[in-house]
Structures are given as structure tokens and as C-alpha cells.
Amino acid sequence: MNEGLLSPDGWYWLYEVPPQRLSLLFIGVFVGFYWIGAIVFRPILRQFVRDTAGSNDIVGYVLSCFCVFYGLLLGLIAVTAYQNVSDAGANVAREAAALSALYEDVSQYPDPHGQNLRWLLRDYTRYVIKYAWPLQKRGIVPEEGTIRAEAFHDRLLEFQPQTPAQEIIHAEALRQFNTFLEWRRLRLFSVKSSLPATMWYVMILGAILNMAICWLFDMRFVTQLVLGGILAAYLGTMMHLVFDMNQPFRGDVSITAEPFEVLYQRMNDA
Image 1 (cartoon, rainbow, N blue to C red):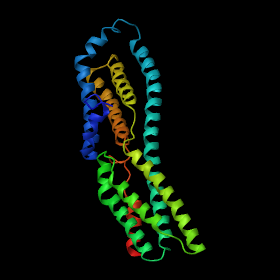
Image 2: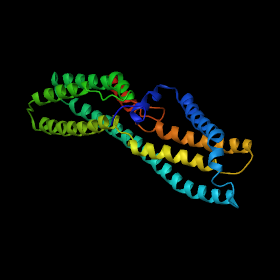
Image 3: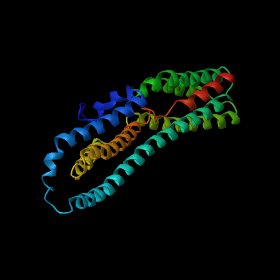
């Protein structure tokens, strides 16, 4: 996807704006667009229905039909965005759970193998909290965690079980490590996941058409500004909500490193 003003990738600087201000910004843009359109475009569009009997009824019927389709679309997109965040959060929790189980397994290894493996897992967890998460919040996929995971895997393979019990523990640790890698890959994949650009274009076009239809109503100008402004403000709020959930690790509705923080605290207390 190309970077640019017309591409959603070109809007990601908005995540740096505080959530309350960003919400007001979205509302201000939509309300401002509606009011400017009511002043500039409404007189032009009104020419098409000025001489039509019962024009307000016709426009109201068209607006009702349009709002049904647009409301369904906006609702489904919002649910999709929230589902992406929810799935990414579940992946993070599963990765932390797999890492915790792996830590418990290697705790059964005899020293110095067990001590070294536990240290590597603590180092990885600290890296995720302190370095990987800030990168993810900026939309950057962290790479150094792979080096730490490979170092742990190499050290894990160096261990040679001496008893049947150690063989069972070692096999379980290897299985748990593979599970951990699976959830880790899904977390990294979620860093860049977002709604397709086409969905954004359809949502924005639908909002513009929604407001344009409202300009066709024959009513007092002040009433037009007030009622249309309320509609535009709610459209702006909905658009901000979808934008905030567009990427799982960015924005106010985002995934935190809490599962790893809890795990790291338990590692240090053990």
C-alpha cells in the first residue's frame, strides 16, 4: 500500500494525538464539512428538487434507505475492527501463557542449564515489555526478539537428558517452545493488521453522500445547520472509533503488555 495523504497509511500520525483531542478533531472535521457544504453546495443541490412536490418526503425516504445500508456497513466494519483487536489480545495472552508454561518446564532442569534457560526467558520477557511494545505502538514490527528466541532454542537443544524423567520434561519443553513461537508469530503479524484501504474509501464516501442528501431538505437554514451538525458529529464519532480500533497496538483502544508484565513480575519473585 502506498504511503500518502489519500492512503490510510498516511493518517497514522493521528495516533500521536491524545484520544480526547483526536475525537474532537474528527467531530470538528465532519461538522465543519457539513456546515461549509450547507453554505456552498446546498443552494446548488436544492435546484434539483426545488419544484418537486413533497420534496422533503422524497428526500427523507431516500435518506432512510441510504442510512439502512450505510449503518449496516459501518456497524459491520466496526465489529470487524473490534474483532481484530480482540483476536490480537487473545494471541498476546496465549503467548504469555505459553511463555509461563515454558518457564515452569525449564525450572525443572538441573543447574546450570535450568538457571541459564530461566535467565534467557526473563531477558526475552523484559525485552518485549521495554523495547518491543513501544515499537509495536508505533506500527513497527520488533525484530530483535527473534534473536533472543533463537538463542534460547540453541541453549535448550544443548541439554542432554540423563534420566527418563528429564526426557519427559525436555520433550514437553520443546513442545511448549513451539507453541510459544506460534503465538509469537501471530502477535507480530497483528502489528501491521488493519482495515483495507477500500473499506476506508467506502466509509468516507458514504458519510459524504449521507450529508449531501441532508442538504436537499427544505427547512430553515439554522435548523439545517443544527440537525445536520448533530448527524455529522455522530458520523465523526463513529469514524474515530473505527480508526482507533484499526490497529491492535495503536490508539486508545489498544492491547497493553500487561500479561507479560505480570509474568515478568512472577519470574523475578520466583
